[in-house]
Picture: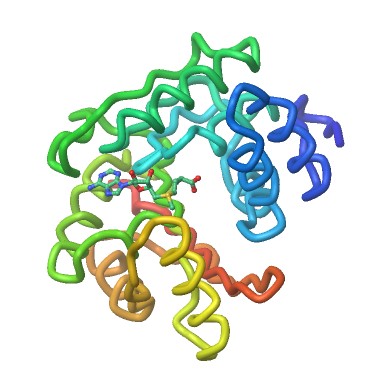
Length: 225
Ligand SMILES: C[S@@+](CC[C@H](N)C(=O)[O-])C[C@H]1O[C@@H](n2cnc3c(N)ncnc32)[C@H](O)[C@@H]1O
């Protein structure tokens, strides 16, 4: 749907269709999984928290679905996506290139969060990444991401809920089937405290149920000096 600001907001069905068409070079099963993601992951909610014209860093960008959506929605001026997985980055470059605005994004292979770009961004996103990181390394990963947020900028964090147990189980089984990992959920209260203690205000704190999954979406703004 078009808005007066020149951006577009997509509903879940439109996002699913968009991703299905965009990733038509992927094997059929993977293509279907990618296009099912908007019914599980609240890309629609994430999108509306990105200010128009933002310069954005996507930490753990995977196959680039978020950046492709933001480009197509006219939200972002420029973006960098970073991931440890080269195969995902190859797909991300292809997908965003097919939006016709691929020149506005760059994807970088990193070996860890310390390799994130040195500069600061208007928005830093971390979507479904932290539960893949060993618990002992999570606080440092968050710190390294926060360092990349410019004063007045936004840290947009999305992960899976800690409970109830059946939503947690759904998430665990999903990750076990698709990534072979039995993950541990992010402790949201600890994360919230860490970010608030790092000079950020909490702008939005949402729990978003989707099918049998549950999402925690936290939006922080760095206090301007
Ligand atoms: C569940 S996927 C989410 C991808 C993407 N953010 C999305 O929502 O579509 C998790 C991603 O985190 C990446 N990842 C894992 N450890 C990482 C690290 N240390 N630095 C950057 N990315 C990492 C994985 O390679 C994977 O692409």
